[in-house]
Length: 256
Image (cartoon, rainbow, N blue to C red; front, side, top):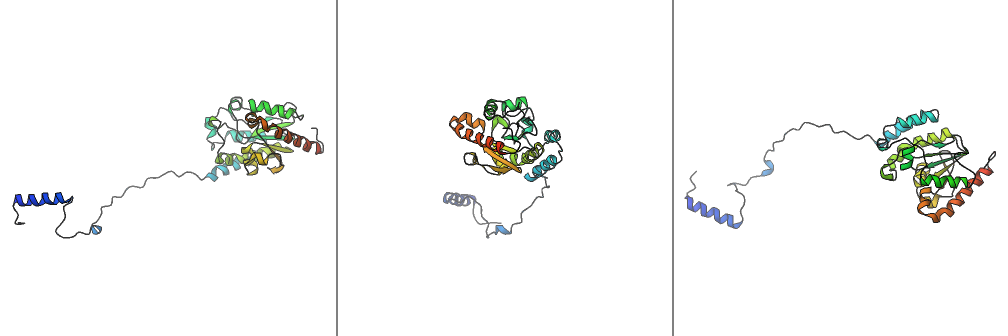
């Protein structure tokens, strides 16, 4: 179509519009761009793996734990449990130490480096202090008066605190462990053990107060590792040991 403009005039008009700030060529008539058909390409659906709900691991743990008829069966069930990632980074399953059927069952938090190496709970510096604490009131592993385990049977990396989902996952095993060991009382050593057994955190407020966990009387106490870091708390720990001793002495047939 002949616009009636020569080349030089058209070029001058274009240069003038560019100078004014025009940066897009427009049509002679308005264009409603909302009416312009958009080409849509169909993309094949890609299956995205969906993480299993947190409850499924807990349910599997409950089924595995409830199927154990004795402590050997429980150890085997825990060893075969694949839902806890901590297992993949640990050397050993840390199940228990002491005498099954003892009047006192101690439940700690999680294995450390020494425990992971030896496959027994409370064998490091904290364990040595625990033995001295128990010996002060006439209890001990060698004497057959205590049975010791942890909430988690595998060492967390870098000795970090157990995560809530790990505690929830392993709680059914702990409950079954208590039921099979049948202690007279349980000692909840530290915050993690109180979270698992009582659903509460705050060991400085909970310690020394008898409660119930896993269907038996429970006494929260400071973890020996905390006492190593905070020697001033040993006074409260001694008071708790005396409370345990008094409880055992008041029980019929008690020997402590």
